[in-house]
Image 1 (cartoon, helix red, strand yellow):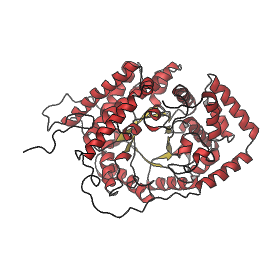
Image 2 (image 1 turned 90 degrees about the horizontal axis):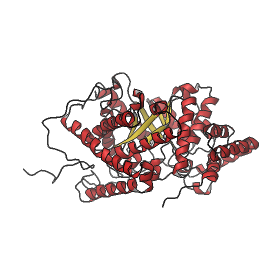
Image 3 (image 1 turned 90 degrees about the vertical axis):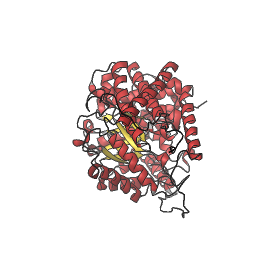
Image 4 (image 1 turned 180 degrees about the vertical axis):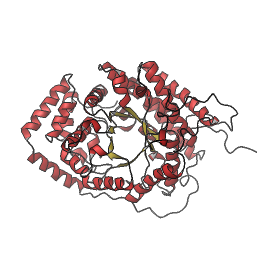
Amino acid sequence: MAERKKKFETDSGIEIPAYLTKTEALPIAPGEYPFTRGVYADMYRSRLWTMRQYAGFGTVEESNERYRFLLRQGVTGLSVAFDLPTQIGYDSDHAMAEGEVGKVGVAIDTLADMERLFEGISLEGVSTSMTINSTAAILLALYVALAKKQGADLKKISGTVQNDILKEYSSRGTYIYPPRQSMRLITDIFKWCGATVPLWNTISISGYHMREAGCTAAQEIAFTLANGIAYTEAAIAAGMDVDDFAGRLSFFFNIHNNFLEEIAKLRAARRMWAKIMKERFGAKKENSMKLRFHSQTAGSTLTAQQPENNIVRTTVQALAAVLGGTQSLHCNGFDEALALPTENAARIALRTQQIIAHESGAADTVDPFAGSYIVEYFTDALEKRANEYIAAIDAMGGAVKAIEAHYVQDEIAKASYEAQKRIESKEQIVVGVNEFIVDEPPFEKTLKIDESIREKQMKRLNDVRQSRNADAVRAALDNLSRAARGDENMMPHILAAVECYATLGEISDTLRSCWGEYREG
């Protein structure tokens, strides 16, 4: 009988055999180098992954209400989404902020906003991830300033700041400064956090957004780890020892629909990073070699058609993340192809994780697919293909040079084009989109954002400016400017500025005046 397809292969171009009759020897035990089977020997048998729900919208009070709702529902970590002006260093009253305040995340202009955002939430008692890049240093300083006001022990504060600027140049676009100056900010954060908030993950090196832009699983591994290599080289060039900072590097992966390939992707990435840290950088500590990561189900796979189908998609993806050994997980709301998730959609997404954790048995044994002929085959094949991409990037002079040469962007664009062709030809079926289509009324139970948010935020911002010590703000910004033009670590100056209620836009503009802005092409 003829097979359903002319050829079976993954999006990475890896041939899918009908069956295999042998595999290589099983990899070493979980928790042992090169950590293919997991970074901890007992994995979820002793502690489940951190269950996060990415949230932030509207006013700080609305976002605070959502965080407290999620904590009551059982999330074990918060994940903050910021609006576009906050991401690119503009205050809510800037002309560039019009129409964007509170839309794709929460607006944070000053420490007063951060105080309201986490009102009633002890920062010492919760792990917080902040998805922020070009203004990461400012948001981290705001978080630390609030922790100090709460009387928290900074040695116990835990969380992650994304702080991954290279993928902004290649796939997302929320950059401000040129790459060299942006890399300096990142290494300043590495140094400062090591002494000030040692439990903080100083970067979340993200393949997620490159995968959303269309890259394959093999490219996601390669481009993410290549960026990790660049950050490591930059930190070493800044005078840091690899074993002093590598243990606080974290990663962020996208979990797509090819269940077996996604499990293998996470296993291959762990093995590759362990080898990179040991063989390329001479890391001595085991923690320096462990690739720890957050994962999120794939927003780009969600469909506006028959949106309830997305519950099934995110379940398959979340299960792959768990079977692949994630340390932290967020499930998308089923309505996110249409709008920010409603409270109901967020609860279903969280319940998806909880059912996997407590009812499926998937968390009861470590690396359940180890020894599966096809998963071991995919793991090896993805490692081989990803290493080929890294070799090409190395030949160009590293990730920054490859991005400047548009190599990474072009590879992602080509992969995205090929994926779209497969959908349009129906070689790839997307249920409800190009097959199994039904007539359906518009889905109307979406979250609506109040258009008056910007006016409220502007009034608050003006009140802060009127009540603060203007001389202290001016002095703090002058000190930051001197540090930016010299070689002093900028984080203490950014912290001093936010503590006297300097705005995010004022701090960003101070650095713009020193470094200029990056313009592609």
